[in-house]
Image (tube, one colour):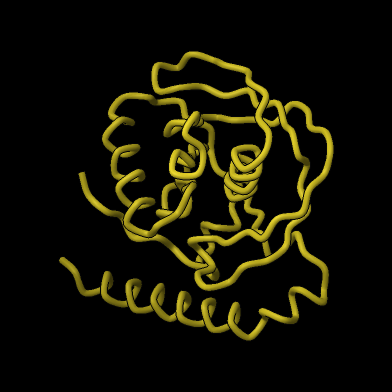
Length: 182
């Protein structure tokens, strides 16, 4: 198992709608690496595109906040219904050091697959529902900065711009390094 690089705001993969998972062979190792990465970064959720992979898959572990919960893997997830509304301060591994008050449905129903390709449909609420929505947004190219009002956005815009500039510079460095690799 290994820790993967988390891509930051400004990387184009964060704005793509991720492709459905069709090949489930060897997914387990990738999922293990995602969990290692999420724990190393001290997050509670991680979408595949946050580690540069265009795949409709995300993981969540809120066990440290809820003793009844366990690490979860969601593949090809789709929210089929929602109800209620709540506001909560969210952070994001791809926009480090920034937190925003995001309004989301309190309860959702999610249809998803597991590592064995089996389909499930479950109802979620509270922190788990919020984390699922956050990760589903990632897989659809939506970031938490897109979900807040102009006032909140302007309060963090300089920090977000700094993250974007660093991310774009890193992508350019990597791209130019690849030109000379034989």
